[in-house]
Image (cartoon, rainbow, N blue to C red; front, side, top):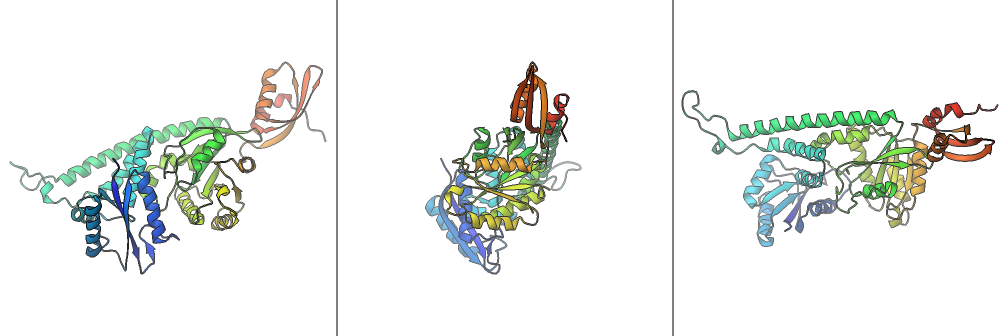
Length: 433
């Protein structure tokens, strides 16, 4: 049975912004995003409350008057959970739960819960658990002397070790254990990366705001069948597949977790092993939902996260997805280009529809043009007709421009990757002046 949730947002009048984030979203729009998060977590939203006040209440965030109103709503709607569109202090959360008598979660805890439900691989589960424990550690305080274990006998008089201290030690040990496991994951990924680099295959990573359509685009490009859902963070564990570009080059395409405003620092840190796939990518496909009126703001938030993981300077192609849902995406394209102009001087912008396939050919051409690893070159070969392997390699991995048989040999002009040219160097004809 789904949990019944009440949403609470707080707007600070003096700064004219919500506590959830500093951006161009109105308080109502910020609450709408919280609703989408709650529904993605499986909750049924029964009511939303938005309070406007000069400053946050230190004890309960909302103050005694609004707290009484929330308490009445909880009782009247039989709510199980109250979700705050802000990050609560440990004291505020404890006071709110005591007053309301139901579970109280803030925005960060909600996102962590969604990640926990989406993680499928062992690595993903470890990363989510690490983020949850790092978030929980400072929130253990406040249980008081009632949780102490009083000792008896010589050397044990006094309060002894409190339950709080025992919990902290237990969590600290678990955090160290998880970090050790994730270091092993990182080492394994490093070995896999070196193996991939032995064969010159460039890696292209999909990044973007959650629910921008990355997984739908990934499926369109690779036919991988990855879960594509309207829920936020529908895809958590990264998936890598190869695609063949128009030049016949083969590249690796990776689908990654979506970003969101105020992505919890604990998550960014915990998912660093996964996000290394982004930092090592030769090219980023920055997917944007062009039909969303806040697309430029979302582009800015994704860029901030990329800067945090040292991937801000990686070359990007701005993929304006869902272009079929707007009459003229040019305004959004202009604004998004303006946001990235400092770090992406030669930014390509490609409108596409991952759902219908419109613009996919242009996107593949743009990827081909942007990748400098294993560049395409034109060569002239003379290959014995009996050498089936060499001829097969050319037809599989090169663009044949012309071919003709001269006796028992095949003369071929082709555009091909430099790595394949080196492999077939013995068959190459000298370039005529």
